[in-house]
Image 1: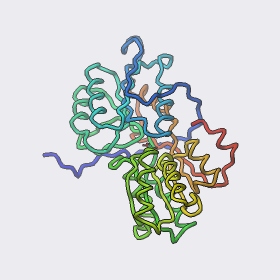
Image 2: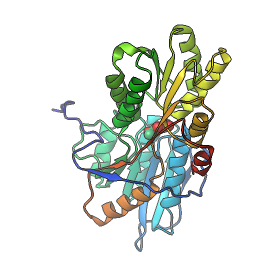
Image 3: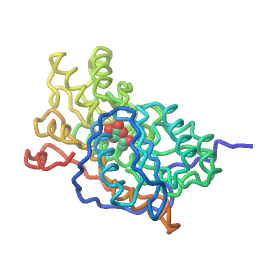
Length: 330
Ligand code: GYE
């Protein structure tokens, strides 16, 4: 009998902390469901990799895709099939099944939501293809569904955001713009933030699906529904940027009438901080393609790997300068 209480999630016992240098990325992403593959196929030292990216919903995702493509190259010994699921789990499951059919050596993927992967993860396991889990986490009954996971500590990000709010705006009436419901990034940021600020400070919540357009729409509705709200916690920069448009359209001043706290730290987000429209940004670094490459090579060669590698994050307030923003690579 399967027992859902046996959860396997990304944050596990062994933790390696990576301080990332900023690396330039070259390739671009058009955000469409594309599949690119170089010639070869696991021969002569080349590792055949299927990478299922969950979408192109945000500046973070675009930077992450660029980093992955810049690292998983033929020069680095990788024959990459890259597939963009456009934020749809069914597309991602299909891509994973295609990778099994292609007989790739290693599968890497960033799951759009945490649950619903049991069947396909079991199929991958039965096909004896090792999995490198990237960015978001899974919640599955499959035992040992992946060899290693690389990503950020989302709960710690939520706590960092919450601690800034408690210290600087202890009486805030908070509206929370959630990311894609059921995603590791949404679930854990919300858990960390809510526990830190206390549920009674949160006047309302709605999901903006990590996109600018949906963040704007959700904020428009929230401004009507919660007229006393004076602080926004957005689970990513893009939703916060969409919210700025809604706040200004309502005749209010972002960063003053409504304090804005976000997560990610992409250049547009940090620019809003310099422009005093955002008040605090917790970083989530998307540039870890080199670490994914390293993990894939080690997984393929059977070398030992930590079960979990946490990407290092920092946080920024309005003391950030224009020069800092201009130096930002993503
Ligand atoms: O914060 C958000 C993106 O999973 C960490 O997904 C990622 C999140 C990121 O859409 O911008």
